[in-house]
Image (cartoon, rainbow, N blue to C red):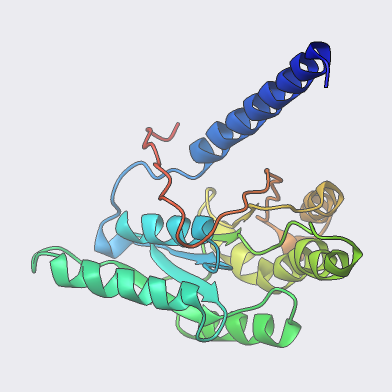
Amino acid sequence: MDPLTWVSLGLQVAALCSIVGALLLYLLRKVRVAEVLPVESAKTVLVTSVDSAFGLQIATYLSSRGWRVIAGCRQGGLGARLAESWLQNHIASTPEDVAPPRLVTLELDVAREDLLDEAARAMAQHLPAGEHGIWAVINTAGSSGLGGPACWEPALRGNVLGALRVARTFSPLLAAAAADHPHAGRLFYIGLTSDTACESLAIMDSEHESSAGVAAESTWFFCTRLTSPPLRFTRRPCK
């Protein structure tokens, strides 16, 4: 290729890296916790998939900051084993006068309504006393759809239809939490989620009482392996 083509290609790559960096900073600012929550005020959060490094890091980070985390995963998958290993290591190293991290794995697949319904029933039955719902659902499930037409159908089931199933299944629990606290009842999408789906969920939130308190947010897609280096989360005071 001639030098002009190389320069043009370099500028395009630099622009793409800048966009990805800006979106990453935005996402890290969204996923923040101001301080470690005391035991009596710990709230329940669902992370729909810890089968990616990013989902696993979000779940373990929130658990280490005092949140009660329910982590969705494939049965017997690497994500479940790593989450259990992390929990055991942190429980062993936690002083006796400090509450241990709370993280529970749960078989979950956003493409299967039976597993979603079963998870919602189990969570509703095992909420701590005084809690009427879950504070947040962080949907980290999904795939890139890269690889040709053979990958498009699974991506559609997970990224778009799965996102809608998650909102429909857990909106009653989110609405119950939102009724008790103005900052509760949030639904976050982290992954390659359809902007149209997110917009539809936001409209449902404003038009239907059953989805009260559900907030849909669309962010960039992160393709991470479970062995990827951990991301660094910066704590900032909540405004």
